[in-house]
Image 1 (cartoon, helix red, strand yellow):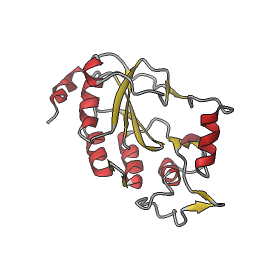
Image 2 (spheres, one colour):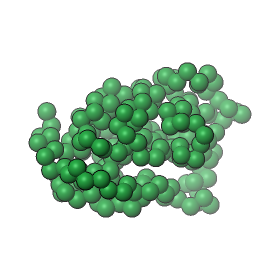
Image 3 (cartoon, helix red, strand yellow):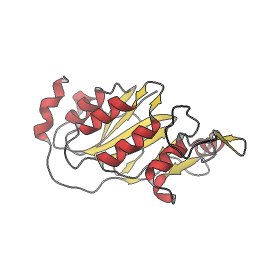
Image 4 (tube, helix red, strand yellow):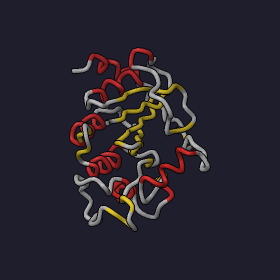
Length: 194
């Protein structure tokens, strides 16, 4: 068991506004343009699509042979990979986030079962973003970062960091380590799996 699990008592029940979505690169930047070239969907933000978030997640991972969504039959659309390597949902409940995670299933070091177990251990009322930044990523908005990071660490992410009082997501860098976070302060916690 992770040593930071005991810090769950430092979490408040207070609800507070989540950071807003803001892709960190301008539409005329090289980074943004390269994302448009790497997959059919380019930069993809689920609330901008008519599909539900589970279907959007399936489309963002449409190139994965482990994708479990029944609507994904072809891995290529118009000669480009059926994917977005820059995809994010809006803020979701844990149950909806777990449904998105299940569609991704297995991806490199990402194990859906381990990630769903970690999400299940989050404090009540937690809000989660599921995405793809080349590989799977999860964000959690919390005021008990040490506990949340300890729980997510059990799912063995390649990168795990926290950003204090973030106004937007996705974040551009890893952020603070678990030992640098303070219970009671609001953080966006980011876990990424290669």
